[in-house]
Length: 249
Image 1 (cartoon, rainbow, N blue to C red):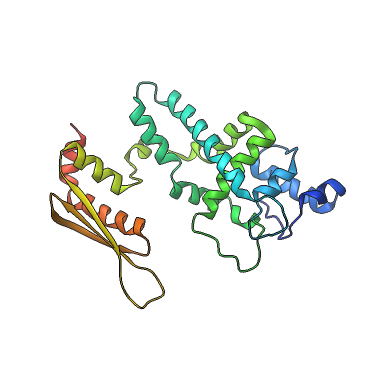
Image 2: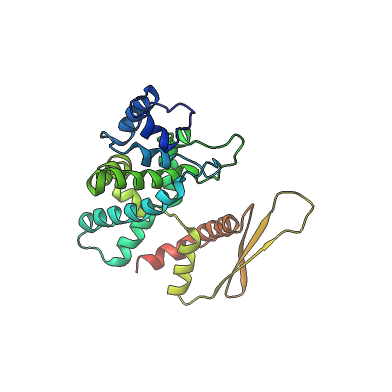
């Protein structure tokens, strides 16, 4: 995949100079990325514009919002036809596995999407930037090329890479898994998550999991969510025999 030069082109430049060399290069790069010839380059400039660029242009977050919904719809349609005998709960769980943040981040990284992003120097990007840009790109394709081109892009980049049997076995949230198991078996589960008091600049969170008021596992990380997930993963493996037995019922 070709890499877009680190040059920002505001949308009005396209209107004034529609046949510049830079525009032609960008158009070819986007065509290679999305699999068809784009007709509205402005939406792809918006797709790869960070909010740190203060020039009154729109940034990728609006398209990310749109792309999230379009992606969910296309994956729902795929699963509905792929698993005709499965119930709503199963389909919802599988969709969650396919569009979870970790998967989208990996996919955006594979496509080198952050290499396209225009931002101010030294701007800090979150760990989910590549997944966010993937959703923004889906939104841009929807605006430019419609639903069918979106379906083709998602099928080529996301759906075809998934092994359905492996997807069924994948765990995306250990916390959700043990909560579901505890509720199903009428076992009381509680998370006690708190921030450590220390003089360090980095925030550290501890999470303790109680089952029926007994400490099962602990987790420690730089965010509340990560600490709970680490503790939950440890609880899952500690209780694995009981969870697997319960899930087979």
